[in-house]
Image (cartoon, rainbow, N blue to C red):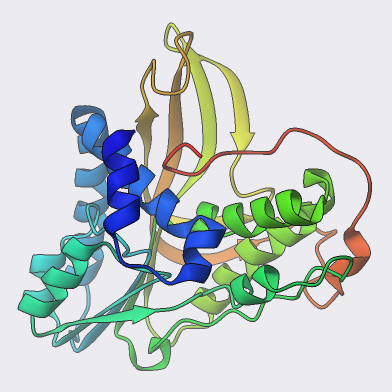
Length: 291
């Protein structure tokens, strides 16, 4: 924890992203990966293998866009830089090691971007105002030969919702349609890409005791991507990372995105401010860093 605190103090980052917790979560994810190298290794290998398999099936290798590239442990960056003329890494911010890698690899370009189009609106939301509508976008997607969304889909709602809960006192249950909207909008933008799309995302969180699941949480809140490819379990938090009593694992799906389905109750054109209510319940899911 002391090392994480020092990294948080020394890592350059915009003040607004610090305030909303993006730097803290990024450092926490990287620290958890380091603590559980052996447990995470199969997931990281499988993720990198799926990315390379998708890339190998193309007939053109000019440009690849990778969303969720803040720390690149799960991305075969060196090989992508050899294969493609332009490698566009997209995320809210990047660890210093990623910035250094981009400096030494000519094809690699960093694109700091909020792919939900809602983070700044959430941060500056006046008290009592309705929840803002997302305006999702992915840089350079129109010119890409391959788009990769890598282990980021389930994370998109977490910090915006946490900010709204803590700063505006909104009930977690009242933000459910907002969570669904952020996830579905990302899939909608990906599905509209003029090129193949590789989606890698965790979909379910399980607490496991003696090898048996005792609790499960839907990390995508009822939104269901249609993915043609592979699936595996990610040992994201072996005991006692989150508790002495159980391990935590995530179900991961990976492959070509073939569409998605969303809950019938989700209206992507509705004013999200109308969904707010007084009901409260426990927050669903956690970030990959455990926050």
